[in-house]
Length: 85
Image (cartoon, rainbow, N blue to C red; front, side, top):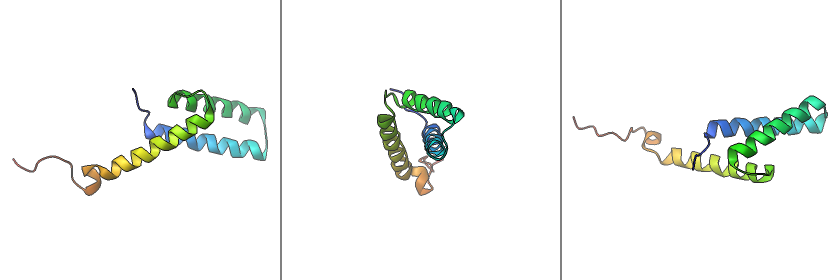
């Protein structure tokens, strides 16, 4: 199974949230179209058919990515490579 790039997922979530706010403040056809596009892209990226599931999976993915990064040797300042020559 392919795992989406957390950076891409974070960008989609940010854009989705921004557009939802814009739509709530002042609904326009342009915002509606862009929100529909971002919603569809987020659902496809996360492998879901509904935005609520897509957001939940995206959140889980970002939490896992953050946790994995903390556990990696690079997070401790180590490359994981042996120092032996």
